Image (cartoon, rainbow, N blue to C red; front, side, top):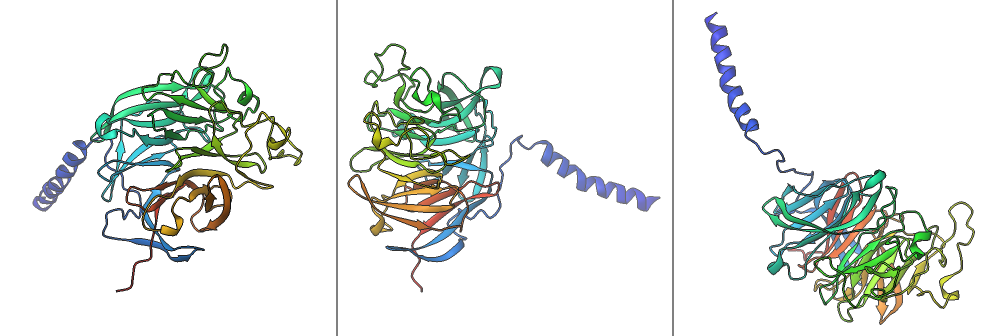
Amino acid sequence: METIQKLFVSSLLLIIPLFLLYSCSDDDPPVSPGDNTDNGNDVDVVIEEVQSEDEAFRVVRLVGGLEQPWGIAWLPDGRKLITERPGRLLLVDDGEVINISGLPDIQAQNQGGLLDIELHPDYETTGWIYFTYSAPSDNNNTATSLARAQLNSSELTNVEILFSQEPAHSPGRHYGSRIAFLEDLSVLVTIGDRGLRSPSQDLSDHTGSTIRLADDGSVPSDNPFVDEEGVLPEIYTYGHRNAQGMAIHPETGAVWQHEYGPRGGDELNIIIAGGNYGWPDATYGTEYSDGSPIGTEPHEDPDVVDPIVYWSPTSIAPSGMDFYTGEHFSNWSGDIFLGALVEQHLRRVVLDGEEVVKQEVLLQDDLGRIRDVKTGPDGYLYLLTDESNGALYRIEPIPDEE
């Protein structure tokens, strides 16, 4: 009997500290996706060497175990913010991945969820973080929405919903959602056609447009349709299908944007205020069902802005885009890099002014569906893969042998 009592007391002494530990823990403890090596010490090299046409590089995985990551932004101290489409915002801090609380209501369904993220250009003064998401609306509809918030430790505070598309539509498809800031601090946001096609030509509907807002969510007085009756004043361009890549040219300030076509007809465009980009009346893409034309081709319509380049007869499904502006790969300076979801590669687009003079396919089928591409503040190229077990990768020069 005495032996049993001793065993019972010993068991309690082991259990009580564990109970206290878990009962006092936070509701949302730090999460640790697998294979996280973003700490400057361990290096998870997944591809040792790639010899491209103009540069040699290797690929390092920094964070694994991400669930459909969609966008990435850097805080001034080097920490990274990563969105996951199911509705999570993660802070990557020297090897630790932390859940950020305080997001608004998000309806994550099919292609909808928490999407892009960008810092205000004057973040160190304002502290504003901007993000897009699919917001629930009446009658089970959803709307591409833009919000901003400030980060306090591991919580978003002062959340402000700046914009929600009108009208909201049935959930699931083509939210667009890339964010870019112009030099005047106004912000552009892309909105997809929501799978409906015709609203992209309806200027009383935000669907299928690029909108422009002041950084506080108000409408700039110089927007192209601001004084036109029956036109939503936020609309900057229209006639888009689903633009999921947008970047500002580092020298000219021009807005470059790409969008999905249907079966073929993916486009790379320069965005011009007030421009009609054709969809669905003019496209180089064809019907999924039988390959028949959809409307006319853009060059046949003088009222439509013709793309700089398009991809046909099959789609690459471009997503994410940035100009390379780092110092590690001098032969890539000024080139566009974009991800390809369907074709599962990284595509380099070489420009001469506004003309595409060369394209190069990199990492074909090596990493999976590339959702976002960014030049980091450290001059490396970063990629997010859109998978249930997605990852953050870094492209870096091959180190010299010691």
